[in-house]
Length: 188
Image 1 (cartoon, rainbow, N blue to C red):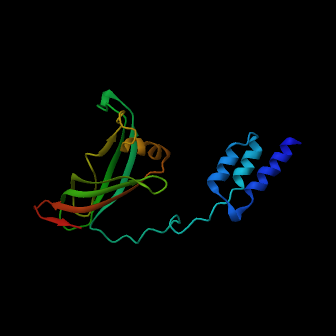
Image 2 (image 1 turned 120 degrees about the vertical axis):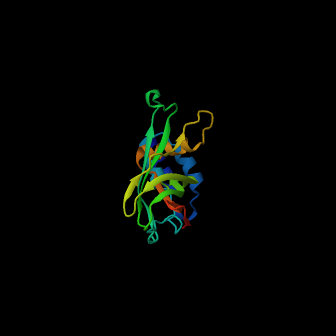
Image 3 (image 1 turned 135 degrees about the horizontal axis):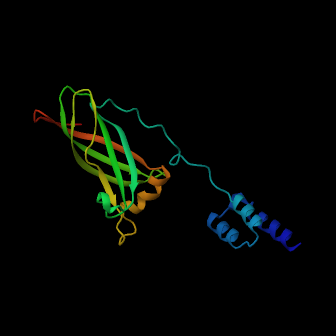
């Protein structure tokens, strides 16, 4: 009988959506001992609908770039002394396509990596020496990486590892400039 009264008491306090105090409601639900009643309490907390800031929007139409990233692969690498990996790290490997009329020998990049919520974890500029023949694709022979720093809890590795291993990390890599084999340079 006591559980039933507790159930209706909790249910009653959480169904008043007009004056819902989410933080207060969470605190009340957290104190409920019975797991079913506690779950029901949480389910009955009023939550405002997703506002425009949280709605998914289609990405803007990609403009045709003369040098494009065709693949950006994120992976985690554990310590492996045999291949000279001395700390756990996240690696980013790139494949690019050259749609220009000249051989590309290097590119400047802007690299953004976001977690599942769309929050930026990494936003940095970089350079990549890579030879890409006209009209062809090429894999970078070098790669970007972020190592685990055991002394810093909020380093890029620590913020990336969960999303990379879960497959929810998203990369946005943009070519910002290029150097051609003839020595000329162009910015995008």
